[in-house]
Amino acid sequence: MSSWRRRALELFPDLRHAIESQGTTIYEVFFELLPRCRDAHRRGATQELERIYGFADRCASQTAKDLWNAAGVAFYEHLGDSNLTLEEFPRWVRKAIFEDIASLLEARIGVTRVAELRKQYGDG
Image (cartoon, rainbow, N blue to C red; front, side, top):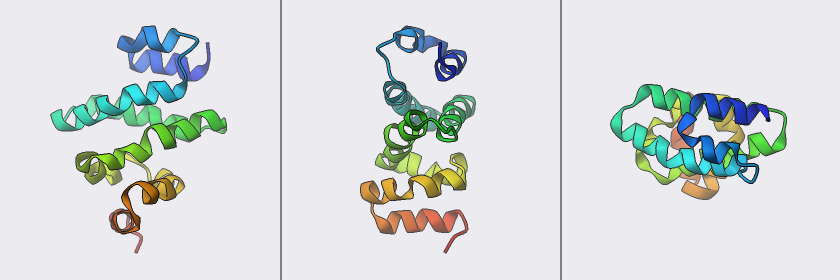
């Protein structure tokens, strides 16, 4: 079993069936985590947010393209689809990751909104 699957199982045991299925990709796991993340923001579920963002951060920091790319295109860029998650972006997403995916966000939410985020990170 791959290390990302083992870690996902530790953090999200309720997704065991999907995670253990050989046909499930890391992209699909992030698509499961995205609505869960939005819901956790609405509920103020800090521990759940720590697990989700921690998993995404870990994947984004890997050298394997499938992992960092999935974190970027299947999770981080879609956080811009919700004002709630977008407003919390600087709190939960490290600046280095923000910089790595800024162009994805620009395509999704526009240059102006990304510039506003940059200011929150202390740039500009």
